[in-house]
View 1 (spheres, helix red, strand yellow):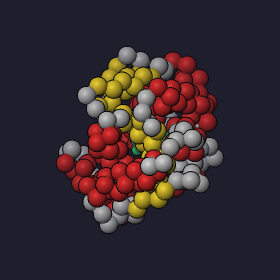
View 2: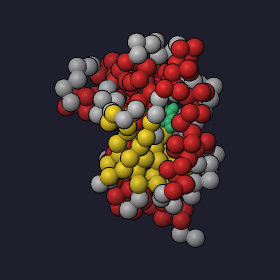
View 3: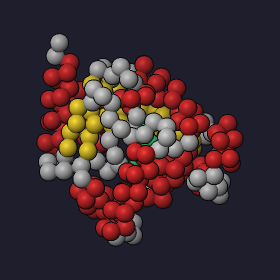
View 4: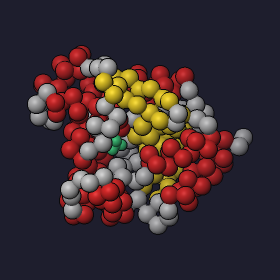
Amino acid sequence: MRIALDGPSGAGKSTVAKAVAKRLGIIYVDTGALYRSIGLYVLRAGVAKDDREKIIPMLSDIKLDLSFKDDTQSVILNGEDVSSLIRTGEIAMYASAVSAIPEVRAFLLETQRKIARENSVIMDGRDIGTVIIPDAEVKIFMIASAEARAERRYKELIAKGEECTLEGVLADIKKRDNDDSTRAVAPAIPAEDAIFLDNSDINQEQTVERVLEIINEKTRN
Ligand code: DC
């Protein structure tokens, strides 16, 4: 069983996918972590996030692995577990920038496809239903208004002790939405056969139930 869960940043895909994976006994794959790890590598190298000339040759120095243990994914960048380091607003902007580089997407393609070939997965990303697993049994495109997403993200960041303002978070989300959906390669657009799920006005538990319903309906026959 392969479930593609795509949608813009902050729609709550990861929390929902984690819960769904647990209920179904399948693996949750967070593909954004791969782009974030490349973003981290570029940041550490002191290279500008849009400097393609410098970033593309750097890919040959990068080895990325995902490992799964006790319902948790770890991302290993050249032997170092960077799973927590990549969860900052700064790295999100680097990830968004490097994800627009076709060579970066090509570099990460096989890693993602291999996991989907060898496991039952719910994979969260932007192009899972369109590029990574176009023949997935279930494709869901999860959305929420930019305001609803900004409010949730703001609360998370404050809880983690990051300094930010609601206006700043909303502006970042709108910029990332725009960049991710208008880029030339694999833009974050729904697959033709994806089912839309707007969770602006429903809570996490209700979203999980709705996703499980969709999976049930799709896989009944
Ligand atoms: O889901 P996330 O916020 O961790 O993703 C970080 C960035 O990576 C996001 O701005 C777009 C990019 N991304 C992508 O282009 N394709 C994916 N499958 C996953 C993430």
